[in-house]
Length: 408
Image (spheres, rainbow, N blue to C red):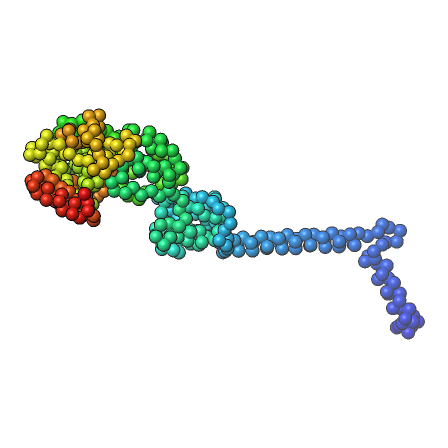
């Protein structure tokens, strides 16, 4: 049939090809407007790229969120800028984490909580102000809160440490507190004017012997080592010391024991303890001295019931701004000064108040002195051992021994 139509094969193929190119798929119809197929392709490509970019960004954000969830943010070093953090009583690990995070010490609360829970020693963190650094690895911040010096004091806690030693008087204590805290001595002197406001019970300031009471802080500054936080004032410092005194008295059951066994007021026993602290060096000697004091003051066998102590005279010299003296240098006017409220050479009984701040040994000595008829005591050697006597003759022999040993 193809032969009948007499169309050359090449012409047939060219004609079909021309018809296909001139059909609907042509980019431009004859006499019509241009097709927009190329614009739609570019727009589709743009949308595709935008969608792919959004998917990539979303994926990266999601990976970041997952990474943040699985990896706790934490610094890696020892820190840089110094900062102060206060650990308060009853702070939990979470409370500490919040404070450290707010101070920019740790990068996240979770990092510190993890370190806290992983270290059994974290439960021993003490209250106080600590000098740390910003940008610290959480575990290093925890270590800094726990670190101790060779003497077992906390290495990074910022505080003022003061040790009150047995036998110190209030003026010495105030000077030490002022030096450690950079507060004026007058702040402590003024705060001490009302010991009851500082926590001393009014019941202390009573006596059963009818003598007047010197209502002062002397005797209530319990010997111990104290730590004070930065910024604390004199009143708070003295309140802390008095609180410790009250706790120690409760532990010793001092008030009940004294009244039940000695039948004197606790204040009188505190005075005796303050004298025994100054006069004796060893616990057994302190107890013997306390017995001598009670025998002289209450026994009715000693002239005028006067204690006749040089230590009370020297206490008055010190608190009145004068220089204390050795016994051999005390003058007659020193010993018999009628204006000295602590004069025990002419005034009977115990003085009007304590003459030092006694420690545990002296307090126990005043609570439970051995029963004896001793009326005299004297240090007989350079180590400070004390000899006791009932009569003047025995006492004279002890004095001779003291002189022989180079004490008197």
